Length: 215
Image (tube, rainbow, N blue to C red; front, top):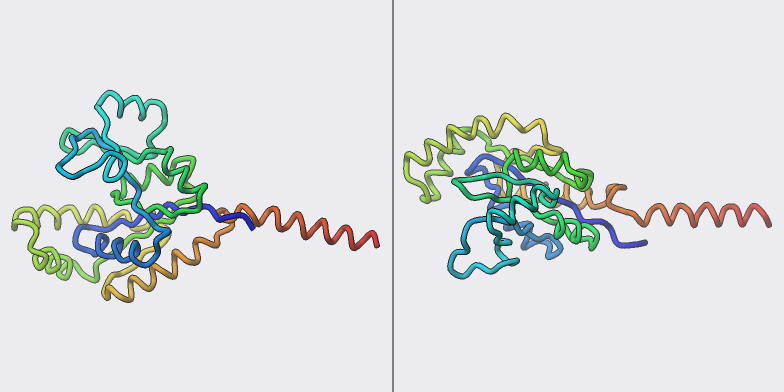
């Protein structure tokens, strides 16, 4: 059977629900899963390489790619544009590599609505409670109190989009949630849309059946 097609894995959650940790664990679990490299108009930071960390473009080039339909999704954040280039994604799908997308629900909507939407596996991660979500944000000691308050305010809108996803997991235990993610990805890789070789297998079986009928 020919190689399967790759999945476009979209994992979304409000900040603090565990998306980043779970994403890192998935990358460690299976080397066939890689982060999708985004395009951006912001300047490279020290140590960042074009094509490895981001695809860096001028504002003009980025807009041209959007106009030509070469971005699966895009958005503007604080004056800079970010997006997912279509070419590398199609290449990964055809090579049987799974891509993990670090995007919000809006970007997820755009990719699901694209021509490559049939290859999307979308998963939303919920916290067990708002109190626990706030505790996690505070305990990681990355944000000032006003930033935490802003993230908590945004979380309600983000959580409201849970029905748009294929799967919804409550991250009340990190190890158990990781196990469920692994199970989902393993099963979704066997979806008929991900196995182009099945058609040829069925054709061969039918040919064998017809041959036997002639004897």
